Length: 115
Length: 114
Image (cartoon, rainbow over all chains, first blue to last red):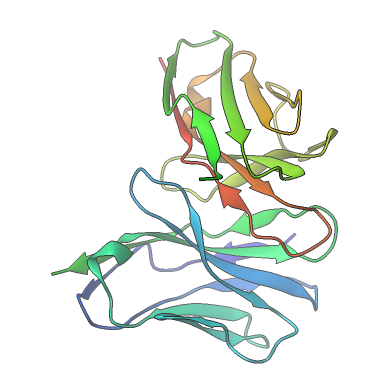
């Protein structure tokens, strides 16, 4: 079974600074998908960014980018120019290409933005 | 706006009293999921529907059931809630099962068991 580990329960960053959230995973599969989801307080979870394992190029979405290291099974999220609206719980998630579209989540990292 | 709606947002029930949580979607997605998220833990998939095909996770307790009467609605029934079932319950949808589709989440229902 796949597992996802986020070793930072909480992180904080000054507004406009850059922060990196860590995620590692364990799988025996060679093809899979990785996601970062954001869950603001009392609001629904939304997709921030996703990465296909077969792609070597790191995904980017505006201020959000990932550092995908397949051999190391590492998938970190970098947020540049942090904004107050980035404050949320961030979940790293894994999804196999086989079977159901089940997301396996990490424990989450609570990100605080300091003005 | 098309979205995933969960009602109620907060539900309080008594130990052992059956409770039903509701999810509806206007996205016309084929797949609907129910996740359980306990405090400070990762969301965990309970089951999902692909159209009317029900798929239970192996470790989902028998206490949890689900119904999907049509494409738009899906219900989570907890037959005899215990204190350990207090959690946030998240509903999600995706367009199809065989492709890499984004899962769209509802805001969740926070269940309290007294």
